Image 1: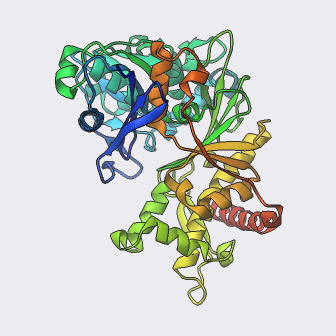
Image 2 (image 1 turned 180 degrees about the vertical axis):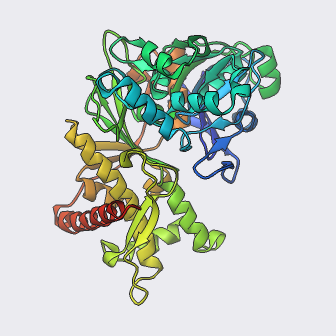
Image 3 (image 1 turned 135 degrees about the vertical axis):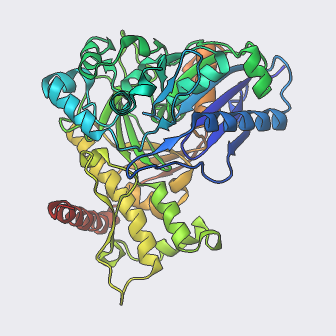
Length: 500
């Protein structure tokens, strides 16, 4: 009988499922729904919301698809792992009913609340204890609900992150994880527990916060009701949960100090692991508990995030013709322009406020346009160079924190499918880039195998992980890419100094 592991990845664009064969370490079935991107509702400027029931609908569809494709028999599925979009807020009542749409990661409404809490708590507490400003994270979003929707707050039984919600729908259990609490800025790193000071400052009832369980552990089992809805077998354990960026790092076997992972989906990230609680004094990059953290062996993840990444590329595709042009054709167009796009600069910050910009509403801007010189080629190249430049801006903050950034791992997906993007990334940051055949859903499945005991070791869990390609920078390209970055940073500073 096969030993199968199911990984679910709850994104803001789609929900993906992957079935992993534990014996080979290979995915035997995977599917993402919907075919087009899930809608993000924006009732007001800077707001971003999604209905958690929509996630659940697509979870059921992906599960049905992969189980049918792999012809899963009774007893074969051994465990389930869940990865999810970070920083979202889900509020439920005592009957586990959702009280309002989820305020998701790229929503900007709570920036002022986070700033107020930072001033109230003081930098001398926030930075060494929380390793971050409360900023625009889950705790601040919750406080916004309390201040602006008291009728909703009065009904709250528990608050959750998106992955906690899906785990609840499967198991009936309302739980979270230590890494989840840290991504919501509820975690005191010095006390190694809930931040009592933050809860007091924001007047958040402690009983609203779910119990935390280790990322790798049996956290509940599929109920009969969930089995009837999903087609899963009742009693299968949920044995792993993590936010998308810690999970992406895990999926690439980034678990030791000095190792780094990167993604370039809707948002772009670099996530580096360290064993000491580093922080940026300006909270432009953020430190969270990593999935393999323990009191005896601490492990932290420093996250650089650029919201305006793949979403800029998809926007550009729509503007340039939608279905009449493919991403491959766009990449080829951009690759035919000179490095630096002949002075054309794209500032990509058009998807909510950016942490590396200290939550300033910088927005997206195309600068230096010469109508007699620039065409589609330059616009595409400027967009991809602009995204990498934004990541490089954050990369240099991470280096200033003392992180050693030499080799970065990524899944062969999203914008890393673009040769232009890959070449720009390795040369602008002067790093080696390793590309692997994996994704977040596969990572969640491997995590489930560890948490349930199906895998006896980390080495066993990653035996099927395949390195596809390693890219190394060429010194001959350092100077032109440095000039391109310098021009981008100059234009950015001019924009900021102009008062936006």
